[in-house]
Image 1 (cartoon, helix red, strand yellow):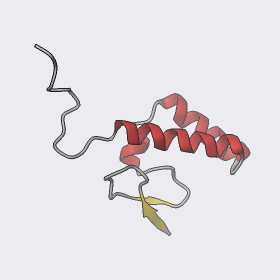
Image 2: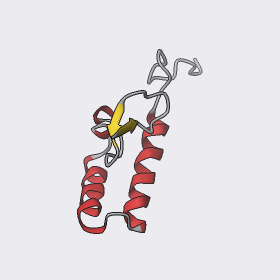
Image 3: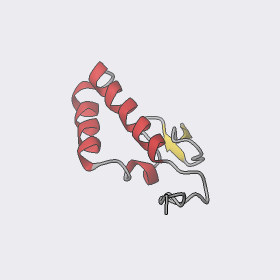
Image 4: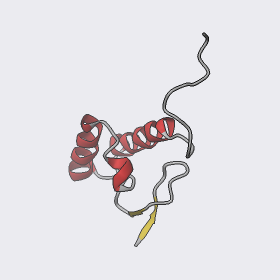
Length: 78
C-alpha cells in the first residue's frame, strides 16, 4: 500500500513505511536520514523515532517552494 509524500505540493507516491518520496528523502541531510534509519531499526514507533520523522517533514516543508518560485529572493534592496 502506498500514499502521497507529506511534503506540501508534492504528489509523488511513497510506501507507507517511508518518510517521504525518494526525491524528498534524498534532500534531507545525511545525518538526519541516518538517525531516522537507526531509530527505525532499533526503536520503531518510539517517541524519538516519531520526533525525527516530524523534524524531517517540517524541514522539507520549510524548504519546499511553489512551482516556478526561485530559491533566490528577487526582492532584495538595491
